[in-house]
Amino acid sequence: DIDLVVYTHFNSSYEEFLSDNMISFETNNIILDYIGDTETITAKSLNINTGKTIHFTSSDESIVSFDGIEFGNSRRIIGTGAGTTTITAATEDGSYYGTITVTVLDSEKRYGRLTNININSKTMTIDGQSVSYSKLDKLLEERIQVVNGGNYDCDEYIVYYLYEDKVVDFHYLEKVVGNISNWDAAAGMLTIDNNEYAIDDDTTISEDHAFKIENGQRVK
Image 1 (cartoon, one colour):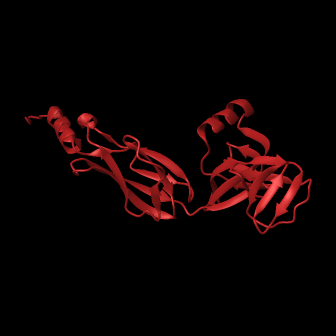
Image 2 (cartoon, helix red, strand yellow):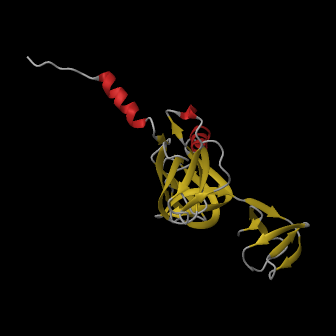
Image 3 (cartoon, helix red, strand yellow):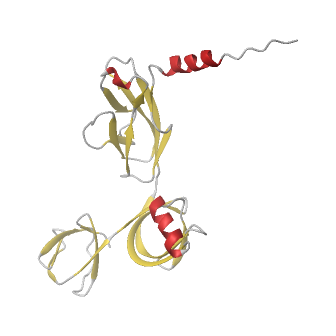
C-alpha cells in the first residue's frame, strides 16, 4: 500500500508566500496597435492596503512612455516607437514590485472610405477593396451581429492602422463641408465657415470639397 498525502493548505500558503510582495497586472503583456496608441494599466497587490505608493518606470521610453500624471495604482501608457519593452511597477523602497511586457506594433497609418464590415469573414471594405481585420471593438461587433446579421453596410471616412496586411484598429473621422474663406498653404491653415483648421498637405482645394477632420487636423 502507498500512502498519499495532499498538501492543499501548504500549496496555497506557498503561493501566497510567493505573491505577498509581488505586484501583478490583469495580463502579462499588452499590445499597442500603433505608435500613439494608449492603454491604462493598473497594478495590484495582495497587500494593496499597506499604504505604499506605487511608481511606474519604462525600460525604454523610446518605445513606451507615460501619458499624464500618476493616479493611484494606475498609469496611462503611450506607444512612442515600434518594439517591445518592459514596464515596472514598484514601491519606493522596492519591497513590492512587478513587471509587464508591452509591444508596440509598427503599423501603417492610412485613410480611406469604409463601406462594409463583415464579421463572418472578418473583412472590411475600404476604398472598394476587401481588407482583413484582426480584431474589432466588442460592442461594435455585437451590434453588427445582432442588428445586421453579421454584415454591416455603411459609408464612413476612417483612419485605420494596417499591420501584416490586416487592420488592427480604426477610428471614424469627422466630415466637414463648408465654404472656404481663406486657404494659407504656407501657414498650413484652412478657414471653413470662419472656423480655422490646421492642414497636413498643400492639395488644391475647391469650395465644394469635403474635408475630413481629426482632432482639428485636415487629414484627407
